[in-house]
Amino acid sequence: MKELIIIGGGLAGCEAAWQAARFGVKVVLFEMRPNRMTEVHKTPMLSELVCSNSLRSKEVITGPGLLKKELEVADSLIMKAANAAEVSAGSAFAVDRNIFSKFITQTIESHPNIRVIRKEIIDIPDTIAIIATGPLTSNAMANSIKSVIGDEHLYFYDAIAPIIDAESIDYSKVYLSSRYGKGGDDYVNCPMTRDEYNQFYDALIEADTVSAKDFEDLKVFEGCMPIEVMGKRGRNTLIFGPLKPVGLPDPLTGKTPYAVVQLRPENRQKTAYNMVGFQTRLKWPEQKRVFRMIPGLENAEFLRFGSIHRNTFINSPRHLNADLTLKEKNDIYIAGQITGVEGYIESTAMGLIAGINAAKRILGKEIVYPPRESAHGSLIAHITESDPENFQPSNINFGLLPAGEEVLKIRDKRVRRQRIAETAIKQWRKYIDKILAFII
Image 1: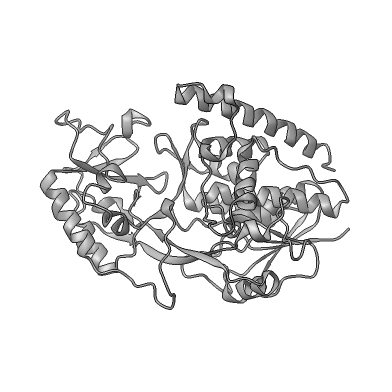
Image 2 (image 1 turned 120 degrees about the vertical axis):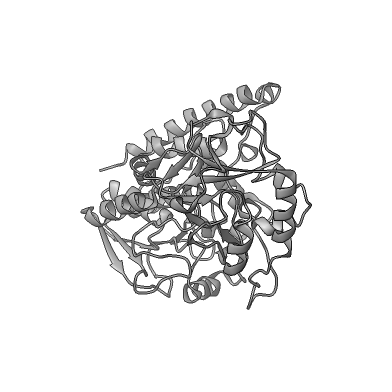
């Protein structure tokens, strides 16, 4: 039996390896770290989270919640790790990064069907393989992919938020609460008056930023918009975005502040906090100056500054088949964010499908496609059926899921989404049952 080659030890690569190994397929997983690090990774661990520590909403009537439910039904390794590393964060599913990555690294490295090789691969293999090199694909591999698809890669810039030392927060000026009371006191809330907000806003949009050096123009993914870019859309934009105070009344006054900056715990010990929605490309000294204007953060110590980096993805509608193989070289599967999905769990989902499909191909089994009604099937439809002239990455959202006329007539949004989610999960379970029948 052929071995399955997987290039990239991120979320997609590890999920693909786990799924293929369940079929009895021997997997060789290549990861270039620590021999070669990216501009944002800090450790040699597999599936290191470099942006947020949140997997977003738990609620099944949201796109992320539905996709996580489907992943759990499919016995996803990433969801096993997430459940083992969960950090209380209200209605969001946050994880302790260290516990999360350690769980995945130990599971993958100890699996009898998986061999991990720490080596950079710069050429596309001439055998069945999965490329899951992620949005930070090395230039060498990017050029190798380009040589096959004959196209320039699309790209956008991604920004990450700062992390603050919990001990440096002035707790006399903040309060603990989750929006609408969901989750108790999971978040640290920094309330701002109108004057404080306006002073902060003026400083933010005038602050010095890192330029998009070496690249011809700046394309920013809407779901990870730098806060200063968002702010330049209008003075009140942030109040309706990451600084919205709705559902966060100050318990001391009973009144809702003009604006609120939320801090989400980074780990179970709550020794570090992530600035929610504060992805940024401000220069580091400017981050100190501007973000210390936020009440309670006057003496903030930054454990990690925000930064911006280039993310790479291919024009999937032009180059990917529905089974996630390249049209130009159909023994090569593409998985993860490089396909044009955006987000941790979306990347995981593409790894899961690629791992299953590649394993079944090696075993000589017929491919079973994910149902269109499912979140997985809807993501695949987005990346393979969108207009290639205007293709952009997307998170999972209910706008991607199909709904019959009868469901669309339901006025109550929650009820409507619940019906769509029920159909998705039902069809997904049927798909997984068919898949499991082939596991040896």
